[in-house]
Image (cartoon, rainbow, N blue to C red; front, side, top):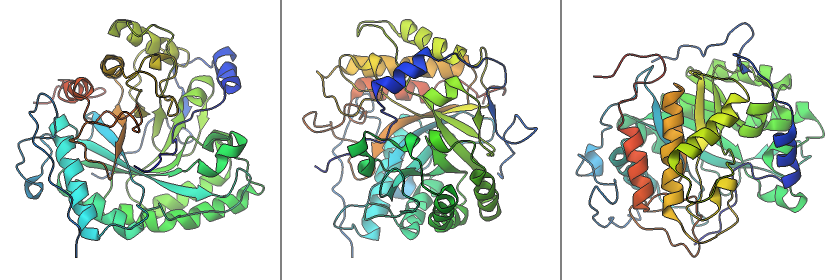
Length: 408
């Protein structure tokens, strides 16, 4: 199995210490999207065939649904404005030996069928782009970056099935590892050159998103060191001319709780990996309190403008202390992961948030198989029955969304 580079904001303990020890910004208006606006804008409305997945009962693996084949995929309750976004981050790296177009469409169908079985109504397709080092001015697609044309094929499968779709390019951290860097600490030698290069990279992907009527394009993810730069104003304005959907930014949790997120976008997501110092045996309510303690450092009460754009946790002992840890593989503990999912879902509903995207499904994996714990990330949830049941319970709950009437 291929190695998996970490995509979350896993940064040194010294940085975490600063986060925990820094005075927090309080108030009812935690972020600024656009000058004078605290609300998002209104969005308009030859082949190598994959092996067939083994059958599973709905109680164990929610991959089975009312759809009997990938030709009849349909989300049970398609997303509409005001409804919660119940989704998953689908991470896609092109394989070294490029799969056929027919394969990727069939694989997208397999993932769509699995997500329908979970009760999802949304999917975010994340994929990597690359930079040479933390001070480089140029970034680019790499061998693992899906082409815009291939992305369109995958997005169309999900859109035809009724999913709300998000396009989310994310800066790969593989070249930053030697300096203990992560995407949130890059410092380009010339920021104007970096933004020009980023614009060039994004242009065909914005077109792919527009052509497939994607709902959201995430213009940046966890780029702490560049937040607030004037270059975003020009880039976002350019994106909004090419893409008629929602332009978003996904902030890392540390920046979210410590400062204003000064980004000129019409929607904010939070990649939320709040550490909670409780034992593995802690009940769900203790985890709920831990999350609320973090969120309260920024603003108390309802958070109807905030989306949990990415969250997850390892199914292992000790994971509550470092939910986004990709590196460690301690003893497997599925209950830890399931309890965390139940707690986060409760927080999102109690605080009237916009929804959740769980990290993650890997595009080329079969979600209907149990993960190989010798090599798989502990954050994988597909094939873990307790976690799948927790997600399905969340996604099929009667939560109607922030400030909306119950959905009939």
